[in-house]
Image (cartoon, rainbow, N blue to C red; front, top):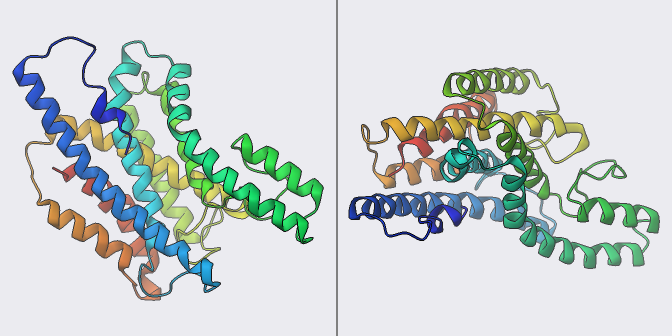
Amino acid sequence: MDSEVLLDVSQGTLLPNQQIRTLSQSARAFIALDGLRGIAALAVAVRHAPYLWQAGYPTGFLHESYLAVDFFFVLSGFVLAYAYGERLQTGMSAQKFISVRLIRLYPLYLLAFSISMILLVGQWHFGKISAVDATFNAVFAILFVPSLFSQNNIFPMNSPAWSLFFELAANFVFGLLGKRINTLILVLVVFVAALTLLLAVAFGWLGFGTANGPMDAGPTWRSISAGLARVSYSFFAGVLAYRLWRVHSAKIVFSPLILVSGLSAILMACPPEGYQISFDLLATVIIFPAIVFFWR
């Protein structure tokens, strides 16, 4: 969760007590959302950890952990709408917004790139990759764009980076159009994105169904369109959830324990094969935005 949501609460002037109390409540709310993000992050880490022992993805525990990516996208849309929505409406430029996002995200990505470079040099040394391919993969990676010289993963040096790339792409669109999109247009965008996602997953279009689950798609060239469909719905569903939350948040309250348990149960579920598509779509299209909306 972006710390600027918690830190950027004043422009150097003293605030009335009521505003301070409101900001304090908001800070607590977003710290709580950060806890949900932590659960999803642990699920992703555990999902990828078996690669250390060449065991592949888990088949039982955290079977649905790939859906954590969609939850991240929803959270990102919600938090960025909270932190930057009004700023974009009142004069913050798209260039400034994108630069802030890059400054926020790129340093950690650069750390991961540095570690990946060590592995890449090792692969080249042992003849597992040519010097030309290694060089071009490294160039594309440092620029944080998909590698045109990879036949499989769009980020061959750091495969999980695909989701961060798509999140930045959604950030770019939000920065460009955020000030122009009213709530009615946003509802239409989310509806079209949801319909596209539903049809694509149900019928295996755009690269869905090519990996370990109906919605486990996005990191490869074969499924790059699926990644775009996932972020297009979930990110802007998060933005819409924030706009609705801003108006209706005080009317319905759920216990944090219920929402934490619900997210954990989804990521640990192992639905029957015939119901997995329905399960994934229900979680992504309905439950994840609802968890963010109802959080206190």
